[in-house]
Image 1 (cartoon, rainbow, N blue to C red):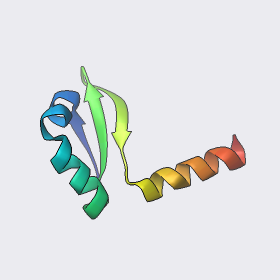
Image 2 (image 1 turned 90 degrees about the horizontal axis):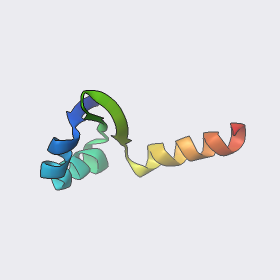
Image 3 (image 1 turned 30 degrees about the horizontal axis):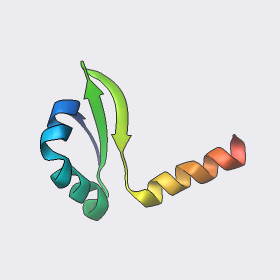
Length: 57
């Protein structure tokens, strides 16, 4: 599941969010001033991104 959270919430709850990403395979979009700026994803998905980048980049 993909959800959004603010950068401040990430700062306050990083450990909990990391657990959600690692064990529940959550995908979290981090916003700053209401704009998406980054994402937390598990390593398996990140590795897929990297492989695609290498293949098509």
